[in-house]
Amino acid sequence: MITVRLFAIYRERAKREKIELDIKQDTQVGDLLEVVKNSVSSIRDLISEGKGMIAVNQEIANLDTLVRDGDEVALIPPVSGGTELVFT
Amino acid sequence: MPSGNWGLFMIRIQTEDFNIDTEVKTLRKKYRNAGGVVIFLGTARDISRGKSIKNLFFEHYPGMAEKQLNTLREEAISKFNVLDIGIIHRIGRIDIAENIVLIISVSQNRKEAFLACQWCIDELKKIVPIWKKEVTVDGEIWVEDHP
Image 1 (cartoon, one colour):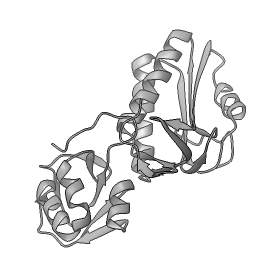
Image 2 (image 1 turned 90 degrees about the vertical axis):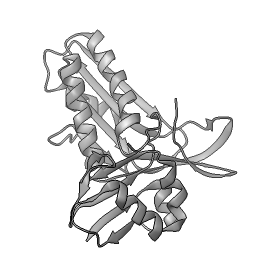
Image 3 (image 1 turned 120 degrees about the vertical axis):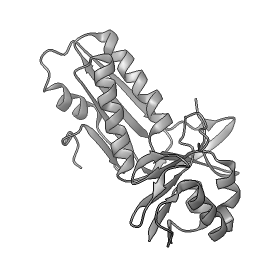
Image 4 (image 1 turned 30 degrees about the horizontal axis):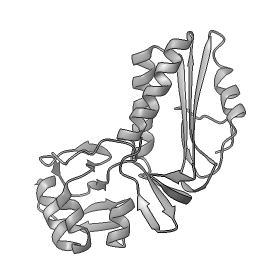
């Protein structure tokens, strides 16, 4: 089971603070995002925009980063004052 | 955490307001070789992009926000060769004119103190998972970029 934490606009749109998912061992973040988009349609467009960052276990990650059972993933919307980063 | 209690890493995220004098005094006490102290205070203003703001709301990613602040602090100390940096950021509801964020940069020389302080606030706004929501008469908006 992995936990996907939602903050700020993600949290408000999804109306929840987290999503818990069962995933295959060693799933890539990019694939995980597709699962999240299918699970929570209210944030699908936001995720597709690719703005902000992804963190895995509180470290900045990219789309290739592997996630494992027990990991905590966070969808981090653009922070106030920064340049927009796109998930890479 | 009570005012003036910097804890181990000179970083705090808290809902309650802070007292600038107390925080500066506590941090300075450690450094008899400090020649300059630069303070940045971020405050809540009542206008943003032409809209009247009623209040702000700050949300953070507990754990990661503190880690990123500490990373930033350590990098600034090393990069600018200052003696120390303390950062306090409030979260939750913030009313107009209230304090939001305090950065204190302590250095032997003023030039480095200024540079480190500016760098910290610029970087904080890029990499630290703390989000600001502006509450206006027209609605609420999560700020994505802000000068």
